[in-house]
Length: 127
Image: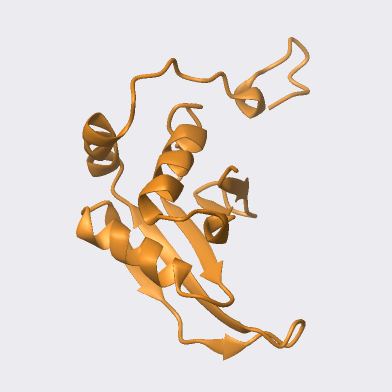
C-alpha cells in the first residue's frame, strides 16, 4: 500500500490519492511523509485529495487539523457525473515545519530516499 502523489500543472501543487486503502489517517500520513519528505520532493505548498464514498477524506482532513499540520479547505459533496458517486475535494496548505516536527514523534528513523524525478543528467534531459 502506498499513498501516491502526483504533480499538477503547477509546481506548487500536488495530488494525493489512495487514502481509502489505509485503515487509519495516521498510517496514510506516515506513507505521505515517507513518499514526499524523505524523498526530498517536498517543494510544494498545496496538496489536494478527494473522497468518493466513506469519510476517509474527512478523517484525513481532521487528522491534519488536530495535529496542526496545516490548513484545510473543503468543498461540498456533489455527484461525479462520470461515476455517479458522491465526490468531495480537500485542499491542504502544508505547514512543513509542523509536519517535520510531527514526524519526530511518529516516524521510525529511516534513511532518506533518493528522488528519481529530481535527478539531472549531463544533458539536462531528466528533471
